[in-house]
Image (cartoon, rainbow, N blue to C red):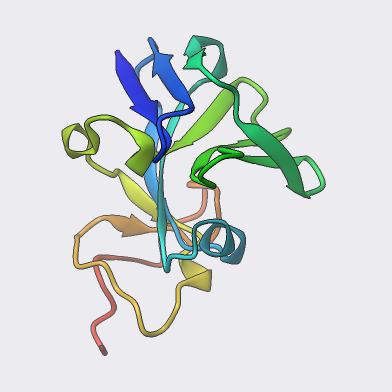
Length: 143
């Protein structure tokens, strides 16, 4: 079981489903939501997520996309989209044990900031879909 919370602990959740995918996202929207150069998500079946304390506030960041956060401390909690109505993307650093997971890939690598790199050998997909071939595996060589 996965458990997690916001910074102030007003919101707590548990998820009985296994992660479908764990991905670093480099898109501009995620960067703005988290004020970070990259965001890591744990994609889980939406039906397996349950809030055990409090409820996050949601806002629509673009058509068919909702981002949630704690109304008290501002911690982002999840991302959801109409494109994948049965899944929900938890922000990995809300997990009680974020060290227990390991990312599978990078998405939206075409939007990656030029001054930030993660030094792993994971595939970097240009967009959100993994159906296209990756741009590369591992960091840029011309850093």
